[in-house]
Length: 413
Ligand code: UTP
Image 1 (spheres, rainbow, N blue to C red):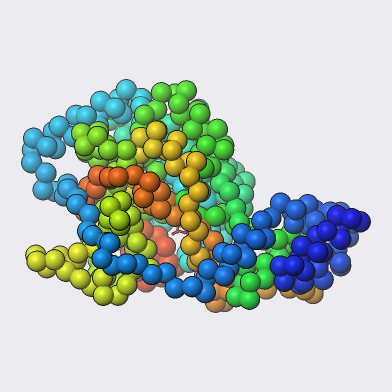
Image 2: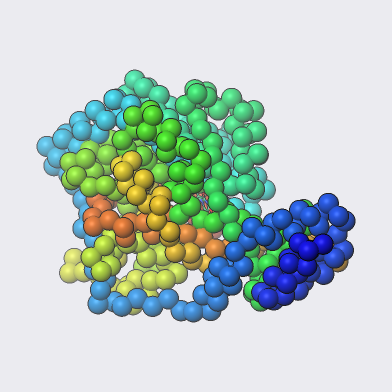
């Protein structure tokens, strides 16, 4: 009973009385589960994160400058040959691994399962996003005569379904010994008043804490140690929802090796000044990506002498790291951003509420916030039509329809 009282005190202190009312109605077993969870939650951190949602993020523009990049289409033959050879050598030596971030909720798409299990309606029969990714890896394996270890990050919410799906589909022919599925960390969801949501299991509803969680989760899950055992030197980390993602780009890898950097990334030019993508820049002398929601309008529209957007290199979640870089950032705490999303919850009468509009904040760290821990990053500008077919929204821009068109156009070429 002491534990119950302690939990009630915590909930009162942090204005979570609605949970007390739910807690009091639960049976003994459910009560114990919820109390146990309350003991593990950092309410102080959640309150701070919620309070931050009310603050405006300000950038001192004077400290921001554009970041240099190389355009893949404009490399000289000599540069291209050099990069490709360096990259190929590393891949063939078995020193390259790929991580897919599949822990997101995919709320905008509205697909009921994990995003990787979404079937893109391509070529009549359709292909699952996981299937498309695996095909891309298999193609590289064949080309370089090896099997690249593939690590898939899930969330606690979608892990079971992801494993089941890949098992059922026999990993789309990928060698299972080279697939590792690991789960990322989580944080509670809060509504507009700062109240924690309760899920169908009568526990505080938690969700994956952003793709920035990849680094620490790679360490905590033992994947990093496993990579070291395998002799991996370079790690590619990409998203699950880009149907044109090239996970083994030897030019990008060779460029990173040749420039002797710890991190590299592929960009594409922003489709328009207000496209909802983050853009690369240098802030206070360090590489950084500014999210679209945080980039001041004036900067988003600024152009250079050639008429190109000054901040036009968009981050497409196509990032490459040395294993030392992952080791380093896996120990660094990243800041959390808030995303306003649709999340169902249980009300005080125990009824499930499925909102039609965004109703709650999800706190997420972003993968690119780790770039600031480095002095430099090598950027390779790719081509939108070759490298970027995101599946984000259920319709309109970056939807299954646009991704299908881009995918089919690329493969018909
Ligand atoms: P997004 O930020 O686009 O989020 O993820 P999302 O969850 O897929 O979609 P919305 O915003 O809810 O509609 C970009 C990539 O980062 C992964 C996603 O799975 C996707 O590959 N991600 C995102 C994670 O792995 N974990 C997270 O907590 C968030």
